[in-house]
Length: 234
Image 1 (cartoon, rainbow, N blue to C red):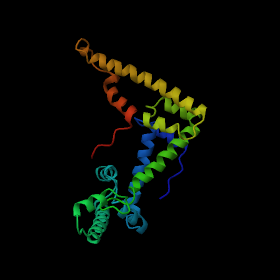
Image 2 (cartoon, rainbow, N blue to C red):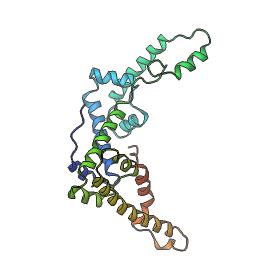
Image 3 (spheres, rainbow, N blue to C red):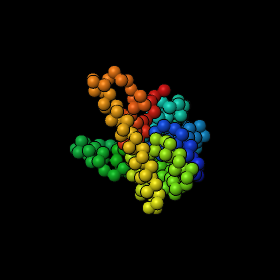
Image 4 (tube, rainbow, N blue to C red):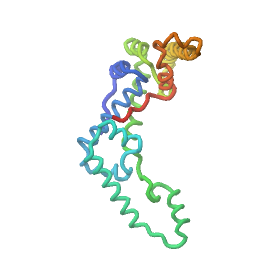
């Protein structure tokens, strides 16, 4: 499954949602990939082979699929049955003769292609997410100097620290880096002021003043430092 072409207009749209604009767009594209995987490619032999050798989706992405309603019970059952079938075959092919525990320990800690019960390939959604992340950040640094995009970022929650750092490695020009830093500095200064106000109002001397927009600043700050909060189960 190919990755759609990402434009600065997609980034502007991502700015309309709360949280890191890069996280928003990456999450949207990852969810789209999972839906397509389950609804259009679940019986596709190459896709089934990838999932069989990766032991299905990783912890994060299988529960996102289930809790977010992105897949379906039949698709999960098909993937799980494929994976368990291969695991049973691996177990049947594996025999322990003498010194069984030493041999088992060696097999568990060896290379993936020779190991017992260890995935031979990475989660396909993780692989797709890495490609999407690179594409999003590359487009960002190439187009952030466009006034329409920089204005949209200025009025948004900006970028999380991990994606801001990562964007600098996308062959970003000095001008693009400067624009991102200026936009980030402005956003962080405002957030810091809200955090200070939140902390002040938690002092018993000022607690009767009540909270304003700074009420959720502690959550927004966590998102800025670590990335958008994962979606809760439905």
